[in-house]
Length: 141
Image (cartoon, rainbow, N blue to C red; front, side, top):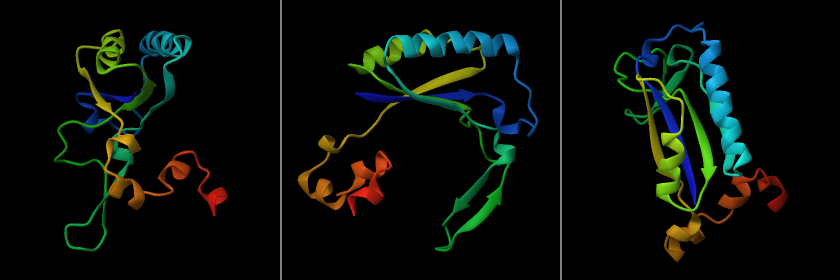
């Protein structure tokens, strides 16, 4: 089962574009990341720049509207993620509990949808999705 562990650092929604990371916190997080890798459960991980460097594209009017960050209405934003492959939701939670997160950080755990989770009709409508996931869509044609 694949799970995303989403890091939500409270206060990151107002962070400046040139926010500086604490080297000690990075060292602790690297040890955690290495433990995930050594356990064979890590698929991918990345940190994200603050929303002040981002943009949102909304479609409320039926047309795309671009809003540059920061986003004043945001209460929680993502600071990064891990994609892990574990046997259960409980195992994903156990890994999240081992994270050296600070008191202003939250990890949200979300199971990734698999094609087998959907009806045959939805699977037919999504034909080619798995090739897109692996970057092999152009090879499938």
